[in-house]
Length: 67
Image (cartoon, rainbow, N blue to C red; front, side, top):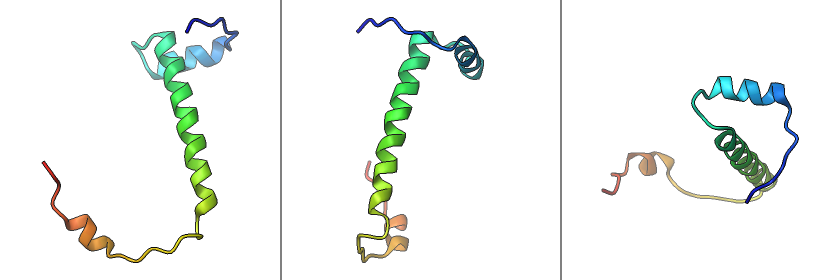
């Protein structure tokens, strides 16, 4: 979708320096995906300490990976 945005030039320049070779569109799309991911992860914090789990993490970590 095509959209006109007023973007902070300094912020965009810094982002382009941090990720050389990326287009403005790629940088903005990545920032939007990262923002959404962080918001989802913050939502998970609401459940912290509210669920009870029983299991053996050591055995889960040692299990063989599927090919």
